[in-house]
Length: 100
Image 1: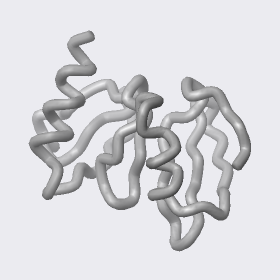
Image 2: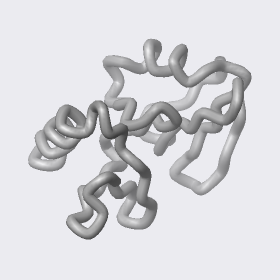
Image 3: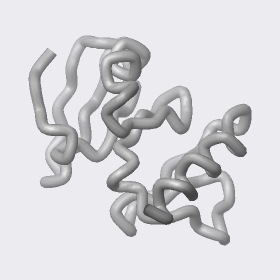
Image 4: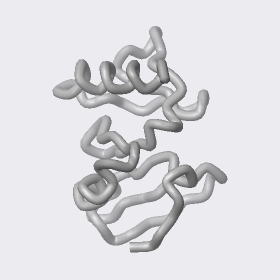
């Protein structure tokens, strides 16, 4: 796996058997590693699995929009869906992080 600084990565997105890495400079890279494997490697590095296809850096979460309760906002511009099974836990974790 390539090495990047945690703060350079906004999120990981599952794409078939590959994973796309979305960076703060709006570039994208794909790696041949499943998102579940990445999640286990980054468990204690400020990343949270919000959906089966999305692993996000909590430092880039900017809000939970009232008009879209099943989503989170990243960098004040991008909305991503939250897993319905984990919704309450994710909202609680994100709300705690946003208060910090």
